Image (cartoon, rainbow, N blue to C red):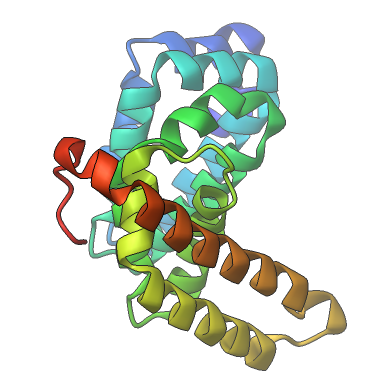
Length: 217
């Protein structure tokens, strides 16, 4: 019913401005439901909300960054496999939308987001792990990493290198067609980024250590 009502612009705008009620209800109730059909319908509906008017959604995400991020991260911290999987896909779509640049930059500068994504890369489920890995690439390939983001990756560089190689092999094994085959050039680019972060962090370590309180993640 809600999805069919979205075609009316007045109602659609209300879903994004009504004190965030719709979004909060979706993330705290429907998207973490134990019923697969409820979760599926909730994510399909919310995806419609996020794609119907990209300009309006971009402004909404920028203004409500904290609430949106907390809501998404809340589902990522749940024990619901479907909720986690689809939240990662939803988040990835948001980050890759060109109009959401401001939201993207805020997200990839926040160390708590990186830590959560790296934790999800280490779960047993290959689908969740690889979905989280897609978002990790956005952090890694950002040429203007914050000091905290840089240090987290530097401190975990050895395990990240091992993961990148492992993920490549898993993707190779799971690929059904040539279109799904992972690109070795992308893997090599990520490995190069990690190795350069090691050198940058080592060179700056003495001058920044006084200002760094981040524990080894």
